[in-house]
Image 1 (tube, rainbow, N blue to C red):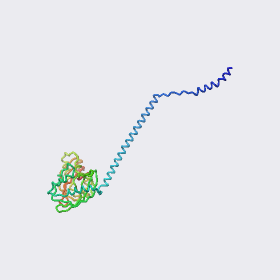
Image 2: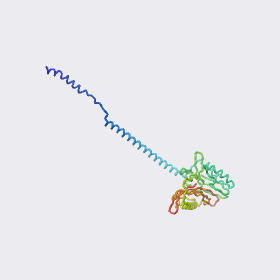
Image 3: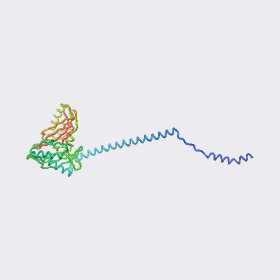
Image 4: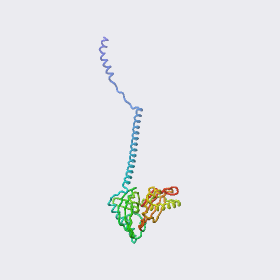
Length: 315
């Protein structure tokens, strides 16, 4: 009987045991301190990695911008160099300098005050008409032709071949006139100066010649610099480009087209080893009575017992 009941409940017990084994209670997940620490470390790591990436990206942008600026400056420089001395037609330039040349080079000694007054309108405010100098007799502009418009260091310069008659004598010369343009408005920023044909060097006006440099107090140095300046300018007006090669960084000369009549208002600044000179020069076209004032700036460099002209600017 006992065996019978065991056999009878055997399948039931087996089924119960099978059901008990199939019913699993899920374990409760808990966030331990170690796991929390790992999560925090992961977040911090991602944040640091993101910051490093953003910093790297920013540095690449800065580097790219610097490369673009350098490239732009290089292209502008090449453009200026390519356009230097090249003939450019601009009706506004032609109209403005038609008036300027006729006003400037048509001169009557008996009406010098009126002439200076009329010239003042072409120059910047504050320009002293006394810088125009004093001419003699009568002078008239017979012919003029534009040779080129070029732009160097942000200063536009127009070059003309002109024919002048002074006291019955006619002369041909080349003049450069630095100017600035704001839309349709023009201003002459430096005195016209005699130059070589198609001189594509940069020249600037008086407002840019007058730089705030500290005056030299050593009078021995000042005297030496003034003496060198006079010697240099005399040689410049009478010598060729080849003759000036030993005296200046960018050699050029007027080869006797004009005679040096005077050097005034010599100012020396800068340092003992790198003095800077500004002066007003009066030149006379060779074998004529045609005179005009020009302004110069010399940036010198000491060389043993003499000086070398590192940069020479006319206006």
